[in-house]
Image (cartoon, rainbow, N blue to C red; front, side):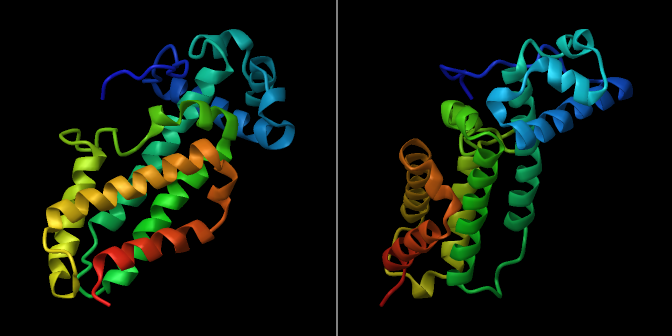
Length: 215
């Protein structure tokens, strides 16, 4: 993925040794606790270091400021959420209805964005394009999540071709990906609080079903 403008500050280095990994994890956990207790604006690197039980100097070896810590937390959370998507994408869905697949897929996507924005809404809204999973490389590193998602939707639609009102499943898969991405990105930019409401899933599900299925 090309470097995006308005990219958030990055950690100075990656923890490689076990001792360093423990320090970094303690910083992440301390930051999340302080955000929950004080709110993100009141969190400082000094407070984070104190809660993590390390010196500010040790913290600054890895992070130039608290925004870089937020970036690191988001990258770690993305890896965890990636595994959730992989787990569902690898399931045998031949016994599930298309309606069920659509609902579960939309709920997974909704939860993905809702969980990220709940960590620190201001930070995520400012930098969400940098954490857009559709543009990121999939864990295998060969394709973007968008390309993987397109292929997955094609296979799902072919499996349910007898019920579809659309003929071109490749074009339909692209449309579904574009619709989902555009829908959630607009919510992030214009109505971020709506990501806490499940009604938006009902709305998007209705569009999917009307577009795909014969009445």
